[in-house]
Amino acid sequence: MQDIVNQINSYVWSPALVYLCLAAGLFFSILTRFVQVRLFGEMINLLFSSKESDRGISSFQALSVSLSGRVGTGNIAGVAAAIGFGGPGAVFWMWVVAFLGASTAYVESALGQIYKEEDEGQYRGGPAYYIEKAMGQKWYAWIFAITTIIAVGLLLPTVQSNSIGNAAELAFGGSGILETSLGTVTYTKLATATIVVTVLGIIIFGGVKRIAHVTQIVVPFMALGYILMAVVIIAIHISDLPRIFMLIVTDAFTPMAGIGAAIGWGVKRGVYSNEAGQGTGPHAAAASEVQHPAQQGLVQAFSVYVDTLFVCSATAFMILITNQYYVTGLESAVSGGTMPTDVLANSPAFTQYALESVLGGFGKTFVAVALFFFAFTTLLAYYYIAETNVAYIRRSFKIPHEIKILKILLLGSVFYGTVRTADLAWGLGDIGVGVMAWLNIIGILILFLMGQPALKALKDYEAQRKAGVEQYSFDPEALGIKNADFWKK
Image (cartoon, rainbow, N blue to C red; front, side, top):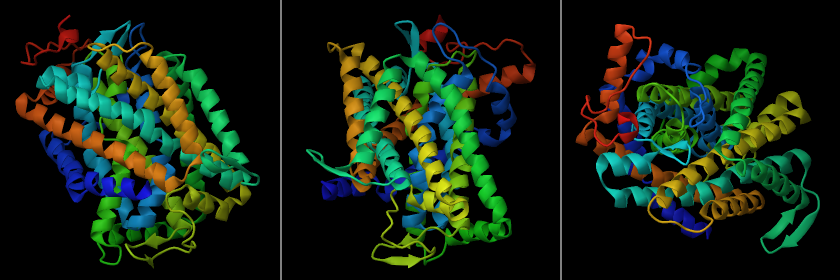
């Protein structure tokens, strides 16, 4: 199974996808005149500018839901894997893909808002919706919807829950072994899986409002607490900070690290973590109540910064500044760090050992708790994205109790992922991320060639902002944007 997954990944995550992510980010950055820099202050202002309604959630809630999807295992175990397989230089390429990807996040999230619709009293939208309405290719939209349901409903949850199980086992021990149909499982992982599935089930059966309310409380708290812990670690080693920063930059281009490995792993884990271009962010963006589509696009661009430049950087600096890592080449360990190579790089171990080296046993426990909240809220976001795509398919093809079936399958996937090996879970997750990224990035590039709706929305918003209007408005027909039926009403 592992060999099959690795082979599929070699095709999905070929250099073509790595450079497509970078090229799309650069392309949209140039077209928007680097909106991620020009309107950074506006992004902050917009976070609290909209209110929750009966049909939609606020901009801050939408940010929290999307951040709950972006800030997850990729920020702890994903960064460790990027360093372990790509070297410290991979962190530099994570920064690059985040900076450029912020413009991609604006485009896809603005599209999600432009082409959203109301479904059973709540807003729905995402790539499947804008591919059908803007591109007019329903078959392509269906492929994306089905792929996304499989990816976020079955494949990606295994990565998040697997990291929770591994972190719990490392923090609390793995004594006691049980032989099951899923193989040998420790009692720690079994108990962890049971707790996660139970709590997750209670929340997702409460609907999108409950998900939004949970994430708007948990996400800011967990991100701030994690970053503060990183600041403490860095402050203790403050004299080493310039050296670590230079290590990241210089290692990004050295033959020893291998430019291909650094770029490949940096971009792969960067896209996995910040999700820019992957097509997940537009689902939460479409659910928000805003005056103009560009507003939520800007808020989602800011979420990429929070994810990678803040949280991922915090993890990277903790690992590198404490020297708790190793770097593996294609054949053998080639450079860096003091960790023994039998420690699994595709896990939170680097991060846990980094904190333990400074804080003792509390470090491992802190990472386990942080990872639980990071990964758990990501599971909530995954469920919402899967539900949205099921709702899209339901418009044309109804399956009895389809939402209940989805919830049961996702909970089963979470349980399975918690007790299985990390490499298999990450491999399945990478396939899901890669296929979604291929479909969505190609889709938004085609939509640009067909009419530039996201760019037109940005120009319209900036014109109204320059005019100093108090109440923004959006008239798609006046801008030459077709099939944006929600806004025509």
